[in-house]
Amino acid sequence: MTPLQVGDKAPNISGTDHDGNSVAISDFLGKKLVVFFYPKANTPGCTAEACDLSDNYSRFTAENYAIIGVSADSVKAQKKFQEKFAFPYPLIADEDKTFINAFGVWGPKKFMGKEYDGIHRTTFIIDEQGLIEKVITDVKTKNHTEQIL
Image 1 (cartoon, rainbow, N blue to C red):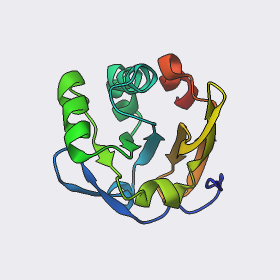
Image 2 (image 1 turned 90 degrees about the horizontal axis):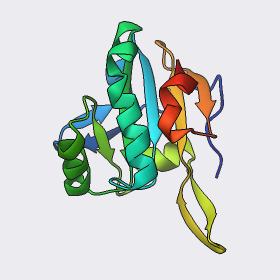
Image 3 (image 1 turned 180 degrees about the horizontal axis):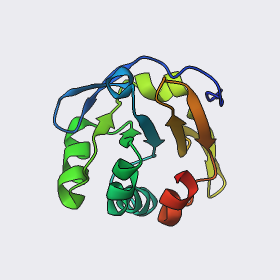
Image 4 (image 1 turned 135 degrees about the vertical axis):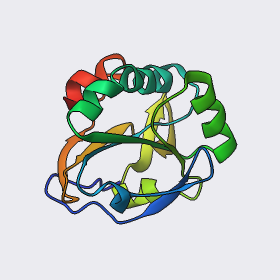
């Protein structure tokens, strides 16, 4: 796992969102972009994180931020997650791990003594020119907005 670092250019990639639409990093040039990677839709930590960002969405838009969420879930799972909580931002269904690998957030993890490969909960803040401005690896799921803003 080699995550992108502050100062790196964000990869110009695209993926499919919960509605089946193509969403590209370049779609957000001219705005600050929050790209948050989460392990699995509809799980407690991921729900807390996504809801915190959603609940504070007007704070983000007031400061010229856009938000996208990314996990390796299917479009169907992302759609279900989005509909359940009415998130105002796209959720990328990255089943082939294009986004996940480009940002370097896939790698070995440990849970309850077992090792496995998975998504490391990480958030990238990308500036208006497409450069990584901040990387958050110690995500506080219930208070993530404060970490970003």
